[in-house]
Image 1: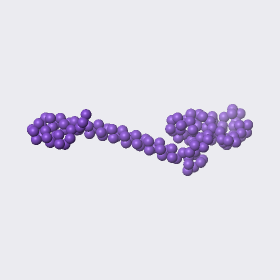
Image 2: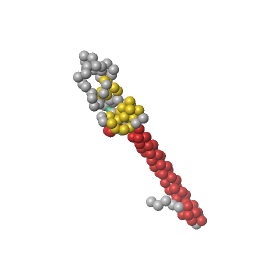
Image 3: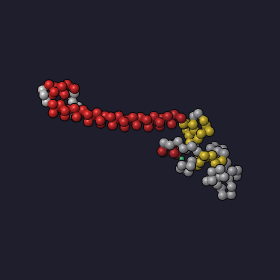
Length: 131
Ligand SMILES: [Zn+2]
């Protein structure tokens, strides 16, 4: 539906067709409301995309997890980021052994030695995390 123009409304008023002119003004008001709603939705989408882009710019994938570019001690779950787009910080269980407390995935870095008994008690759980 084409929107009425200013000229359409002026022409109707000049002819004395005030009812028709009022209807055209109402059409314009409805269209303005629709545009305002659409604009609000688009602004929300832009904010969401900007936040996602900022997060993506902050992280870099270094197998087997993501690291913050400005702090390599900040490690994030690969599964949670790739699937849910959430940056979930990993908890260190042992040297070179990390766990995501959100999805419970474990990550081991190159050089991790599972036979090294440090940091685990007889249950096999880490005294640090309790998992
Ligand atoms: Zn995770």
